[in-house]
Length: 586
Image (cartoon, rainbow, N blue to C red; front, side, top):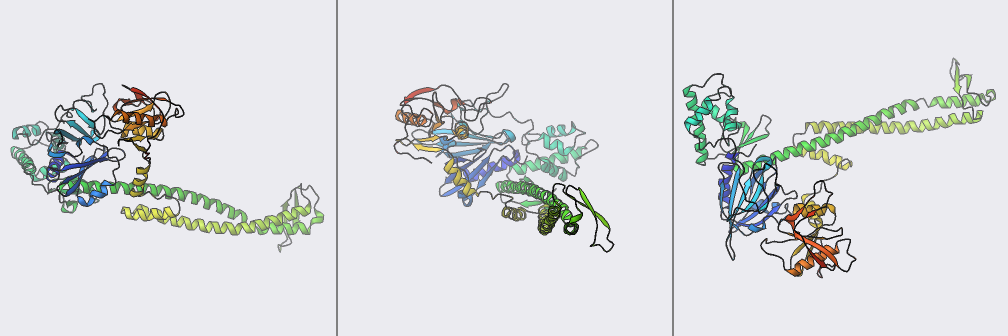
């Protein structure tokens, strides 16, 4: 767990320095809605805040103006938490030294609106929740949690937001000397490193190791600690958290024995050898660097695995081909025998009776003239049998040349692939593997991956059909069952309007409400319903009944086929199937 309470404590200070007073320009999400990008501005300075709620790599990253545009183009889904677009970040705080960050936002307009954005960096339950300040009601949530029996809280729009249950570990800022000592004395046989890291929030094995190192204690203590040892342990524990409270940070990335990044610390650790730590300019930089290398390492291992699978498969095929060619070579090497049989049969044609299975003759081409037996085809004439052996001779002679050539090529290919395999196994970095990948791409054994720019352009063009009503409201239309499902259950926000032909199969249609408090006018409802009717199997009818409701009342049936939906609280309208006069389709 790289992101612990101590890391969050330090990150919050850096977030305050970088984003307090900033205006939120845009909030975007990546394709699987696990990463969210906040694009902000304060005066002329633009910055990006990257939030990931991925269960394994949940984190916060701060990106400066240089990376702003690059990140901006990687996140295509723009309609996220639109209520706070244009709001100002007034305050940023950590909740109870837990892995929860609260951003307080204020949006000015006809009336002032206040919001709280809660970032829960809690492992597989990580989430981002937008809450109305006045009544604590959830407005939107990135990862929706359905109502379950025994669940302590429901993360769905219009429900009251409750903080996650507090962690069982103790807050190190609130612990007293007597409490600390009692905890240690109450666990005399437990490994001290494990005891410290499991008992106190924000204490990982490296920080626990530092406390023990400074105290002159080992991880395992066979006997009860003396009063002086206990006092030393408490003093160094409290000193470390005093430094953290005073924000005397010295962020480092910790390396393992193989120089792979293994952790981040907000303090310089004397217990870690100098060769195993890298100084970072900030905690945010250390976190970004750690994950960047982690992703590169994961990419390297995945690519290595993929390359070795291809190489092993190719080597297996080539070795099987070489074995078959060796067998064919052995079979055809004795091709001169066929010519000898043909010559002997030609010499002794008068001795052969049609229907004979074989002929025994003296081998006149051998100085000893031994008797040999030549197999015959009883169905053929003596002359035809001789011609058959001459034909076998010519075929075997030609085949032998081809087989020898193919065997030589196959053996050369085996050497190339064995060398590539050795290089892949010895590869120290991603660059070495990319060179091998290029060779395999040229051999058409691997496909070239689309660049992010190409992929982004493709996704942008093919996400959904897009229309605009006469008064400028955006309408999105799914083109197949897969797009329908994604549009209805992943892309549409709870307050968007959802349309579908009432009694006919058809596309899922979503009317985008940029402002959840603004209801679409009646003519917009009618125009959107016409689009839904047009993209249905009832398109040929003069009038089609179309149902509509808010997207939050559209559910996916359990074990339902892709694109199927259950609709609640629906209204219906009778319209003529028709597209807007000014069609804007992508």
